[in-house]
Image (cartoon, rainbow, N blue to C red):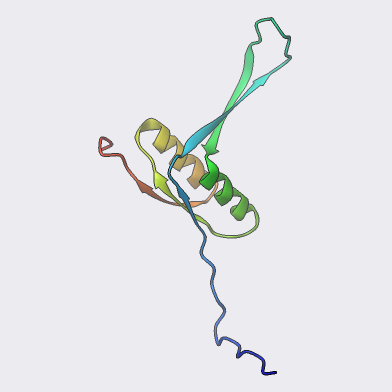
Length: 100
């Protein structure tokens, strides 16, 4: 059987993570939880969320260079893009028609 010919150049992989419903994940930290009582939040963490953002973060952690593609309007969209850029994930964002 013949071996397939080797490519003269290495093949590059591209990962595009497309998001139709981007989100911001909010994690609330409480010092202690008591059922039926008032529990006060000690810390709040907000991070990029949604399936495509989570896949892009996992790929980045594995050493790939993913590109997140999705809609990003308003303050939430700006926060999402800033969070992805902070994680060094490339973005291609479509803005809402009301966003400047």
